[in-house]
Length: 478
Image 1 (cartoon, helix red, strand yellow):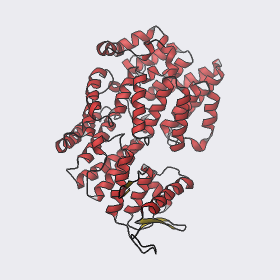
Image 2: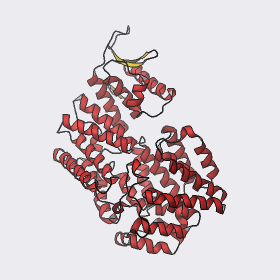
Image 3: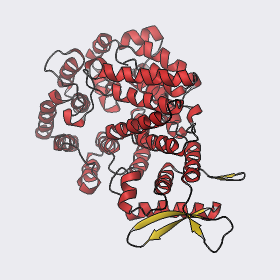
Image 4: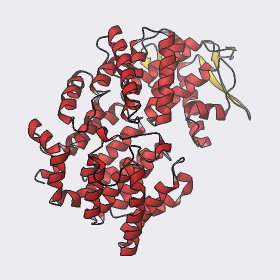
């Protein structure tokens, strides 16, 4: 928000509530309405809503021109207060003024996770298009499949209303690229075509659109194509770092270069601290770089902001379990009200059995956890990745290498392309398998085994390291 030379940066959530109230055109919004519009329907405490409303009221006192009124036992409404009118004569706040102010503030806050530096505003004088783009950006930050689907729908509405808006087309291209990465194999080509088409349209309008350039560079599957993908992505990284940083960091993590990956992840969360997926990746990299104290603080801070977030919750659980605190992990999971929702029971069962085995190291408990892992592996690629990590940590390396044979090369039981079963609607097809889990801290015994050299050679990582002149961190002197 701005008044003269004074500008105030709004937190994204405050911006979303301001936009939602302004979009209501003076009508009252209930707390449930605000939760649905701004918190994605998640469980939200009264204190969380009260803090946002208090922040808006503080801004109203500082800048004037509007106020937020409480309608007892109903909700809130936003009304305009004429400048200089201490008596409080009111009328409905102009949607154009409110939304434009909110978008200005949001841009300053840094929509940098998925938007290039040139995209820090909506590039639209149409308040409805500005609102759609702001809502799409907010949904994108959440980063889960449902959120991304909603963001795509909002960007499509924006391009329908304003076909020459490069920011909207670039944002849509980035969403399609994300969906392509996690699509089932039969749908991936169509999704890639959509991403390329949207990116081409953005570049036609604005040749320097970083979002579109990052999309085209990011459509190369990483697995087995690390060198080619890195060349394309680093070209974009030089001029438009914000929309490509984390993907480059992901490539580095997949190729065992965790120190450099951590540096890029740190830059990403500094540029936009309001993205839970990025915060999770950063905390994971802290752990895998041996910085457990910093990782602990990062996980705690992130979960304090995004309670019950699926990625953060499980990463925190396994972080505790694999850093000598399995009892703490089990106590953390015992708080049912804090668990993520919509997760298959099997995922929790495996997590609890794994932590129990790590706590007792009793053969009976280890065997029970191993059986659960083996039973789940055929149903999802992520089950296989988690199993390899657990098998490594408890010394079941023969089991780990058998799973890796099936996961990467199809030798052994078939493993589904889905992540955690088809109900989760995310996929890791054979052509896009992940390798970061090979370099997790708990997987150190795997890397110390003589068979690991043959694995990385057959996967193609050895060739990548040779042709790029890089050395994975596990081969560097401590």
